[in-house]
Length: 308
Length: 219
Image (tube, rainbow over all chains, first blue to last red; front, side):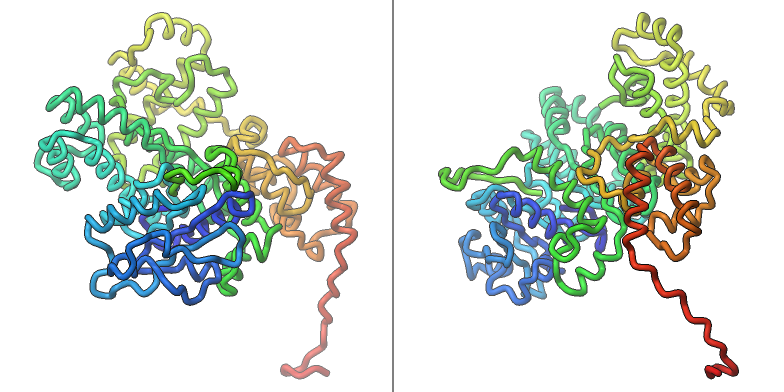
């Protein structure tokens, strides 16, 4: 769950989708990666987590699996992000790689990652480690702007990692400077540039682009115009970024959500028949369709899961 | 990824080359809304020049593909190639002409029902929130329903919010809900009885007592 802007409902969506998937028999681990503004534990009703991601960052704990805490929802575990180091919350790049590798090894069916606001390299890496990425936004220009900023950062980062040649990677880094002197303004400019440097890398760029398929969720819609925004953004993704985003769904503005936050409970628990819950379930069903059925509990643990 | 000039009309409208008229219409409406001048989705990504060029290409693509003769000729001449520059010139000529925009609200409501492609509600509770969900699925605003049904938009809102105390006598509500349902392409024969049952079973709110007051004190 990413989206660039704070307060658009990433944590709300992460908590409720985790619960919906857990309720359908998936073994779920919800992970708060927002070391600077941890909230997921509060939404899941775990008020003071015993251990958290911060212990991994500070190297007090080396096994990511040991960070997982039980929640009151069966099948759903939480890795919290509380008590981050105030001087430097995010792990250094090498430690971050160990962390994402550990997350992919967790013994469960689905891992949902709740990203913080902003487009910091760490945030973007958490978003990209998943097999799927949910882009959560509000129908407001501020949120749309930050979402594109986040998508841009994720896109360039994804491409940079996929490239094999140093000079091509360096060129992508140059292009990340949005006022770069080479005049690379759009992803298409970048592709043309890379193709001229090395056709093989150009083909790799296109292949990576095809696999990069974020799923859009528009939260707090109040009109059908707001709903159409999701289609419009999907189209912009195609025409500007050249990527085939999926419009996963929207969630109606519903006053019960505020009530749930105040009471630190899930929408699906407290107001299961509310408008918001119906939309959340619809999104969960669509996601489950993409995930396939949960593995039977007896099956031996395989590596990896899905991250969002 | 292609530059706009290299895209075919199908790619511009994001439809398959075998798209039928309905699909084409829906794609055109969504594209029109997405790249409209004030569209939020363009914010911070496309420059004004880019989006204006996109708008022209969308209009041109629709004009060609919606006309079976022109579409046939286009398909013959463009195996997989993009539009030639002379077509762009035609688009520029046509840019000021807004004849393609349907203004009749009924036409609008009728044609875009179910536009969002998301699954329908499994439970049909026929309550106000369900009606609103159906309306949003259809991509229709309250005012558009009001324009078609000639029902006061406030009443439509009270129907959705189930503020029964603000609605007129049941016989009128029955008519309103029926018209609302028909407007969204729902079956009034099922929606109306379901909704009226809710109305009947909801305990009536006590009308506010009109206390007579004098300088703020009850008398």
